[in-house]
Image (cartoon, rainbow, N blue to C red; front, side):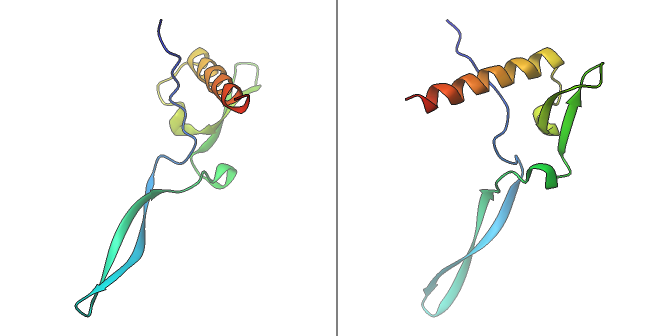
Length: 92
């Protein structure tokens, strides 16, 4: 039986670099660069968008990168699967 899969992002797919202070080694201070995801900025993000059907009704909203190459039916199915997974985890 095939497992349910979804490809929708919970956080921004772009990584940001943050600089963390490293420990001093022989009197030389080092800095390390940490690759990290930032939490989704929602409606403040330029990539955040609404998907609107032929009747002008919104059927999905989120990062536009979630929707690249997907049909309306695929987008709806992904949200159904994701919501099911969230509910299952909540009920554990």
